[in-house]
Length: 511
Image (tube, rainbow, N blue to C red; front, side):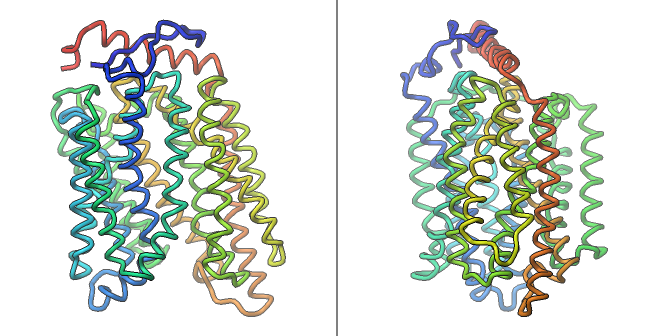
């Protein structure tokens, strides 16, 4: 069982013991958990970021004669992720955090091996589904495990450290993937993940304990099916909109069917004692606010990650390698301020760092919406660096606010819903922005040769960032309602008291 002390309402150190008191392993055990969890997180992040450069080779190798194109290599994995995440909380309660975490790592390793050996596109997609089913729970489960072993008044700093470490994945993924594809084969991208996953399995099995909450509640099978089908159809419609046509009947019918199933799920869940997705979590104001903030900021994030590189190549004719280096400062800025934002959230509340970070994000997004074909590349690099600094400053305060607003027994479900929310928001953001570009230019990456065509393309890309600017302004308005110093201290104290009450009831109270 967990052993937690309490913290006074004023936020000062009360009888709350050090992190090491959580399970008798010593003061460094929480950081051991952090290290093991990061190993699994790296697998998921590397797998996501390294694959983009390999899709052309996969298409050439397996694509001829295949019924589905290489883009489904991404979509199939995402479908598996959104399928397993709604059940993460139930699985963790039934199996325990450690057993589920190790099982997910084994599934991810098996899926990676099958991907490396896949002889056809169809078998590769099946293998990707296995890989996604294993990897889907790793990120939210890892966050829940980390939050479980650190005291509530350090959650912001800890999530910031975790975020900085995970940022190495997006920074290293594309270069690693490029080297592997150039020097060997796309199959080695998946093959290289297998030994890392096996090492993570060994570390998790030997070093982790399972102090998390356990409960033997029935599985809402019907709700799980509705959640998988509803979210899956929405994701497929968003991902395939560019190929099917943004106004095509197939796109809208798929999207509306998915939304309809989710509405049925919402109505059905309200009357059930153990729904697969707990609707009462959305009634927690600060948690709901954090989810909305993620949606709003995701538009800016995906405009920068997905469409600014295309803009730089189309409008300026820059090579992909140079564009990659231009985007590095935004990742560096994010890493620099992420831990700082979490540390500030713990001590002064989430409102100040969130408002400052979003103000910087608003300013830089407006700058990206005002570019000219002649704008200096050095200016763009500076804007991206500032945007990364602003993003890092606000990201962890938003996340830790949502987690602190939930009771300790809802942490795993809350983390899974947060991850699911981010996946769906990203898919829809890309679809909407791509649709806007297609309406203006006919495609997201048109061929331009004349000065008039270049100017037209620049104006279209600028319009995307004007849309993103509106969304980030809405997020800035929402930041006013984030908790200040006093309210954050109250949330920390409430969570600490819950741990103390659980310990007082004894180790059998959760069963």
